[in-house]
Length: 132
Image (cartoon, rainbow, N blue to C red):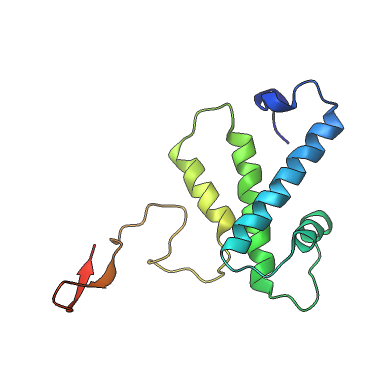
């Protein structure tokens, strides 16, 4: 899985306890992060999906995909601890959390985005303006 010596807070604990704690951290981190974004799965649902690889009846497939992608990203973060981060690592993280099957040039993964980001706002005169 990962080099446990990079997790100093786990040192001195049995290996099975170390792995259990990291899984619990992954599950809680995944649940709270996806819940903030509107995911309807409970912490118990999240743990079930990640442990069993099954879906929860009546819950959106999008929510399942978000949980699985987020957990994959956390596992990747665990593996990056203690080593140099390279640009490809950011692409791998981005790929891990992608839940959409269809991609296009405006939502790339595996390379840097080329289009500028922006939003619309109202200026002091009430006129809509684009802010890059």
